[in-house]
Length: 267
Image (cartoon, rainbow, N blue to C red; front, side, top):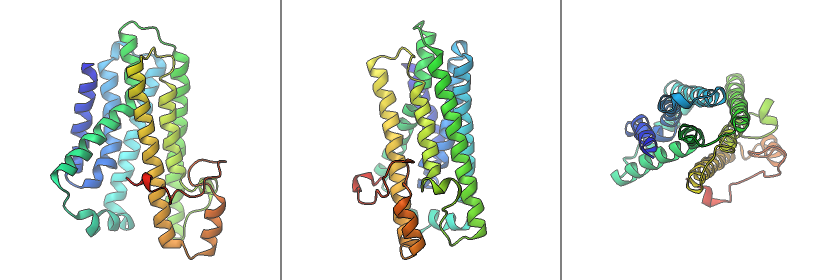
């Protein structure tokens, strides 16, 4: 599985931006790593590409470029976010071992996330029969997730421009409190779907499932951090209390309104 080592090297190279600012390992470094991995997969398996797998690679490229660019702009231009990024807490020098661990862990996770597409193409290139129907369904699901995530970010930006001090509760935020994270859940669920019908073996499925479970954990962890910040900022606001008590935090129509008590989600 030499191609997996190549993908890991690409993820390590791109996410190394985190050596400048630690948070970049899992923000801009994340987005641009996924984009770079999508291009690398398409190049490595160009002879095995089909219409749906091209669409899968394109979806990952769009996702990575959009997210990486959005986060880069926010981290360098948005005043409120710059205060968080350059806060004394985040600027504390991390131990070298901790930096190395996070760098390598993030790179491995990113490769595992894109592995359904890479493994599907690797198996097809090796002559293993694959079913493109699942690839089509996965690609369409990923594109829907990208649209959801982008719309959520746009709605939040528009709402904050009108009233920077108020929490966002309109549009997609009326259904879940973290629709951008929901969009990402949909994206990687699409990637998981594309693994079906790809002739994956047990070891390959383990890689795929570890990547999927890993990013779902990260999304719930992010939702928990946001919940704690919102409680600190808006906790005394009766309107926020009412909103938070009736709006699911991440998954629509599932009555999970808080994850603050789940300390195992801390990451």
